[in-house]
Length: 183
Image (cartoon, rainbow, N blue to C red; front, side, top):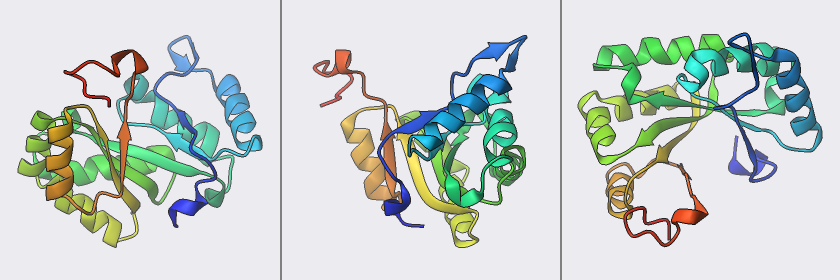
């Protein structure tokens, strides 16, 4: 898959979904997914920790079980707070595939990288593990979501040049804040 398969630059983030009785409202989520896809969009973004794990479950129940695999692009994330050592990473990844109901992720992101999180990922060999997952076809593109300074971003991309995409959180209210460095 190449980046040109992404039909647009708008993604459906699944960090916050309508809840009913502490569960994702599947009827509403189905309606939202259908509207998003029928409008020509196709990129869905989740993470193991979104809505205490309920986001990945909802993706499996409402997106991947209802649409052909070539109809959507799915991004998931490796969050450093869900592993303590190298041996924890592959079981976590395999559980994410199973919960989401897919055989591969189009994008697998190192989640919420900061200088501290980056050090933990390096210590636990997660970069090498994810590169092997890509070689096996279980990850199509390696990416990261980033939450630190421009210097830290430059350091990570210099040390990990195979990272293909960076997801940034940009708050326009913080654009001129020197500590956030949105510019």
